[in-house]
Image (cartoon, rainbow over all chains, first blue to last red):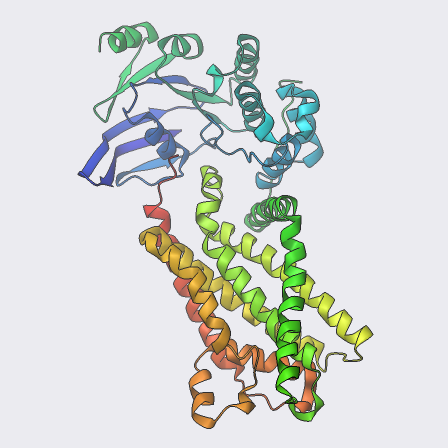
Amino acid sequence: MLELHNVWKVFESRQGRKAVLRGIHACFRRGQHVGILGRNGAGKSTLMRMLAGVEAPTRGYIRRTMSISWPLGGAYGLHTSLTGIANARFIARLYGLSLQRTEEFVADFSELGAYFHEPVKSYSSGMRSRLLMALSFAVDFECYLVDEALSTGDARFANKCLEVFEVRRRSAGMIMISHNASHVKRYCDTAAILRNGMLEFYEDVDEAIAAYQGL
Amino acid sequence: MIGDVPRREQTGAVAAQVGVISALFIREMLTRVGRSRLGILWLMAEPIILSSLISLLHWLSGSDLPNGLPVFLFYALGYVPFMMFRSIVNRGAHAIHANISLLHHSRITLLDVMVSRNLMEAMVCSTVIALYMVIATLFMGEPPHQPALFIFGLTLSALLAHGLAMVLASAQVVWEWVEHLVHPFTYLMLPISASFFMLDMMPQETRELLLWNPLVHVHEMNRWAMFGDRVTPYYDVSYVLLWIIMLNLLGMAGLRVARVRLSISD
C-alpha cells in the first residue's frame, strides 16, 4: 500500500513561495492501475517524485508498504553515455539481481538488437523508452510509476508492456501520470484528476475523463 | 519469457549497501576512464612535467637538498599525494550536480554518491602513485623506507579530501557561489601544504603556522616514510585524525541538509 496523508509541497521561487501540492490524501493498493490526469504545470511530475520517495514533502507524510519503481519517463535513470548493457548491469547491481539473467531479460524485452551494445545517447526516443521499460520490468517492483513513458514507444511495444502488467497483475500495480485521456482510458481501472494542488478520485475512468475534458 | 522476471535475491542491509556502492563505483569507473583516457594519461604526465621543471629551476639555482636527497623524486613524491587530495576535492565537490539523475533511484543516497566517486578517484590516483614508487625503486635505487606508512599517509589524505569534498558539495546546494571557490581553494593550498619544501627548512614561526594545516602533517609523514632519516619530519597523526573526524561529520550533516533542499526536477 502507498498512502499519502495531507501532503504539501511548497517551492521557493523568485516570486515568493508557491504551493504546488496542497494537502493530498490518497491510498493506492497493490495491483491497482490508477491514472492521474492533469494539465501541464498541474504538478504531476512533482507528485511523481513524492510517490517515488526521491523528494520529501514540505508537510504531511507518505507511507509505503510496497516497493515502488523509480519514475519512468523521459530518460530518468538512464546513463546516456553508457551502453544499454552497461545500464542493465547497473540496475542489476543496484537492486541485487543476477547480472546474467538481467542482461538476458533486458536484451530480450527491449528488442534493441545490436544497439544494446551502443551508447544510449545514440538511441531514438522510442528505443530509450523500450530500454527504460525493460530495465524497470527487470526489477520485481510492486508498483510502477509511469510518467508518459509508454506514449513514446510504438503501439505494439505498448501492448507488450500491458501484457507484463496483465501477467503480473497480482503483484504489480501501476500509477500512470498523463495529460492524455486516451492513454489513461487504455491502461487504467480508476482515475484521479490533479487540479489546484489537490487530487480528486473517481470510481470510473470515463467519469474522470469527462470531468477532465470539461476543465 | 515475459512472466519470467529476474527475482531479487533476498539480501541483508549490508549486502544491499555494498550492491549500491559497487554499482555506482563501476559506473563511475566506466565514465571516468571511458570518457577521458587522455585524462588518465595527464594524471601520469602532469607530476613528471611539473617535477622536472622544478628540478630544473633547482639545478639552475645551484643549491643542493640536504643529506643528498634525490632532487626529482623529492619533488615528484612531494607532489603526487597533494595531487590526489586536489583531485578528490575537485571531482567530489561536483559529485551532486554531476549525478543528480541517479537520485531518481530512492535507494541511492548522497553519501553513496560521494563515497563511490571519491573511492574511485583515490584508487585511480593511488595507482599512479604506486607506479612512481615502482619507478623510484627499480630505476633510481630509492625504495621507500616505510611503504606501509606511506600508504597510511595516502589514506589519511584521501579521508581528509573526502570530508572536505562532502562539505563543499553540500555547501554548493545551499549557496551556489561556493562552486567557484573550489578550484582557487585547492590552488592556494599547494604552496602552504609542504609539498615542495620541508618544514625543517623553515624558520620556527613559519613552521608553527604551517602546522595548523593538516595536509602539512600528512606530507611530512609521507616524506619520512619515503626517505627515512635523511629528513627530519614534523607531524602529529592525532591532529590529522581530529580534522578527518570533524570534516567527515560536518560533511555528512551537510549532505542531510542538502538532500531536503535538492530538487531533482529537470
